[in-house]
Image 1 (cartoon, one colour):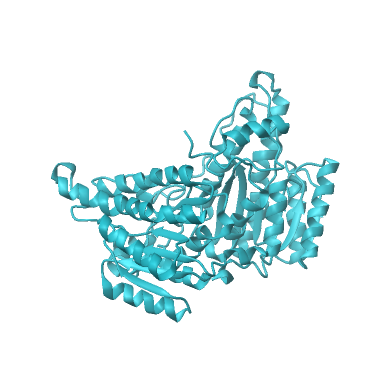
Image 2: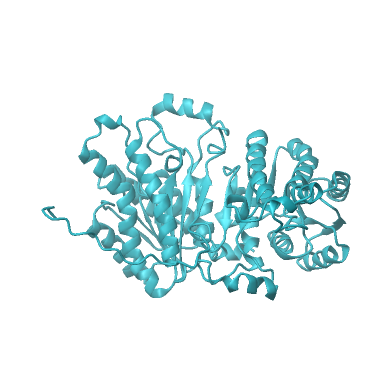
Length: 256
Length: 273
C-alpha cells in the first residue's frame, strides 16, 4: 500500500523552500524518493542561506537537488528555475508553490507599491510558476501542482488585508486551473496550512502565545505535520484528486 | 522515521462499517495492506464474509460482524465484539450509508418514517458508532475517526432531501467531534465524488463521467490510499477537515459547459500599457 505513495523516480521543484513549510515539503518529497530542486522566495541573503541548507538535506538523502536564489515574482527568474530543474533532472513532475512574503499593516497605511509587492510574490508568483511548469507538464501529459496557502486565505485578520487577498487568490486560482488541466494529466491542488512554526505572520512571543491559547491544539503546527499531504498529493495515490484544498490547521477553521 | 513508513498501520485495529462491498470493501483492503486488523460490519453476512476472506489473504485478521448501524443496540454489540476480539480500537471508518427508500421523492411525498430512515442511515448511524467507540479511544488517548460524507454534503440537489441533509449534518458532527476529542483523537471526512462501484447502470446514469472535469468516474480502489493517509500519523495535525476526491467535480461543478470562451481584454482608449 505504501508503494502507491512512493515518489521514486519523480522530479520536483519547490519554490520558496527558504521558509519552514517549503523546506519541510522539499525534505518530505526527497524522503519519499523524489529529486528536489529548491528556490528562495526573494533574493534576501538569509533566504539564500536557508535554501542552500535545504538542498544539503536533499543531498544527504542521496537525491539529486539544487538551490537557486530567485525573486519568485520575476518571470525570468521563475522560468530559469524551472528550466534548471528540467536540465538537471531531465523532467519536471511536481511543482510545489511555497513562496511566501509575510506582510501586515493597516490598509490605509499600505502603499500601492507594498500592495503590489505582496500580491506579486504571494499570488502572481504562483501564476508565473504554474505557467512555466505547466507548459512542460501539459506536453508530457503528467504533472502535480501543489500550492501551499494559508488559513488566511479563508479567514480574515485585521491588518492582513493584502496577504489575505493573495492567499484567497491562490485558492481560487487552484480550482480554476485544476479544471483547465483536468483532462490533460495534471492535477492542481492546494494545502491550507494552519499557523505553523517558523512562518511569518505570527508576531514574536506575545503573538505566538495568544495564538496558542486560541488554537484547539494549543500549539502551532510543526512544518513536518503539513508535509505529509504534499507527498500524498504528489503521488499516484491521489490521481483522481484535483481542484481541492486540503486544510491542515489543527481545528482552527472548525471553531466559531 | 522515513516519511513513507509513517503510513504503516501495523498492530492497529480498524472498524469499517458498510464493509461488504464498494468503497467500504476497498478501504478495508487498503487498511489491511497497510497493516491493520479489521472488524468488517454490514447488514449482509455473506458480503462481509467475502471481505474477511480478502483481508485474510492479505495476511491480516478480520472479524466479520453483522450490524445495522441504525440500531444502537446492534452497534454497541458490534463494538463489544470488536473489543473482545482485539482488546483495542484505533480506527473507526463510518462508511455505511447510501440512498434510502423515497430518495428522490418530492418533499410532500416524504413520510415521517421515510425521513427518519434516511437520516438514521446516513447520520445517526455514524453517531451511534462514534459514541460506542469514543470511550475506548479516550482511554487509549489516541484514535482516528474517518467519516464518509459526499459531494451532496457540500452541495444540494433537487428532490434530494434526506441524503443531502444527513451528509451535511455528518460534516458538522465531525467538526464537533474534532474540537471535543482533539488533539489526541482526530476526526476527519472523505467526500467521494461519483463512484459507480463497477455497476454499469450507475456508470450509464452518470454518462461515464463525461461531465466530471477529469472526464471519468472514480474507481473504488482510489479511496483506499486516502483512507490510509487519514488513518496514519501523517495527519496528526489535521482535525475536523474534509478531503474531496472527485476528479475536480466540486472545484467547478459537474457541468456540461466546460471551458469559458476566450474573452480578450478590452482596448481602453488613452490607457497606457
